Length: 448
Image (tube, rainbow, N blue to C red; front, side, top):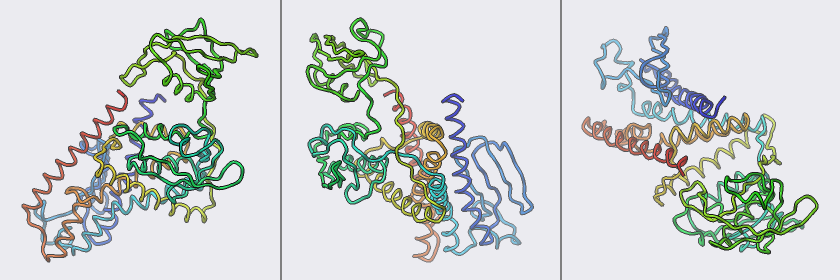
């Protein structure tokens, strides 16, 4: 299956699962309180499949699979036969209406927990948080190869994924973090990463690179695996291992790239020490200005690394009972870090992490290719994000309805119809702006 069609397929699967579960939460709780459900729809637009149940509810799968809704019998929308008024949503006590509104996000949180539990029972492969090389700020802080990260700012980091997520948030805050490490010699140490020294104006991915911590499994040897069209192939050959640049030793390919970037000067050759077969030779290569795909040409020598898949060296797998506690802890961690990231986006005015359907499709396809455990993890994060977002006090969202019901609970009467209408317009404008920003980010990422 091609990447394009695979992305579309896994997007439909992911959104279908999450939306169905979310709307089923509203549906199930409403039915428990005796509210008549007119329609349960997965997707928007023209119905593709339709079935009317014995309960009178119309079950629909619609054309646009990017959402869904549950339509209740409600006197605020149309006339209701007096015989059925007791089944109308608006006739139910405010606490019941609040429970129905909160049920959708609650079911997303429940689904997140179930998905994490299934992931841990299957076993999630990952990378151990062991430093392969330390450059830049990490070297300044005293990190050395072989250091195993134990905790960052007091938060345990059992895998490199955990460490990367915490460091990404700390990089946005630009404040120093304390990292507890187990040294290669068996001792322990506390090292402080001076993240306040990160340059302003760089995004989160660049900040992680500038921190200078490279995991052991991500190290690519400084071996030539490809050439750009105008590369100096008369001097270099595929399979050559580059040992040094202008006398500065290099081990990994990213270290080689960093030395070329820092030492390259227009019109000046770089002296490379090479290992070719059993022979060590030196060649002088003139770097040229090349477009590196980010719109900013840079001096380079026109080579690429050998393709190499990093192999997992960690597997988090638990029995069905033990996985319950681990899943609860993981869900709490993800919830805490997701809300912190949301607050950072608001407080720092950073909208780079807002993703739309294009990015979600790419991530869905990529996680599916990594195996069932990674896809379950992706679904869990997406379900959690959907639950958190729907609790935001924005009109149209469940959180907006909860805000209205809370006001009604305090003042003893529903908010006015005018307030509801104004709120609808405000909510539509906010969601429209958010969707435009998400699509903009989706389009900007491939171009950059």
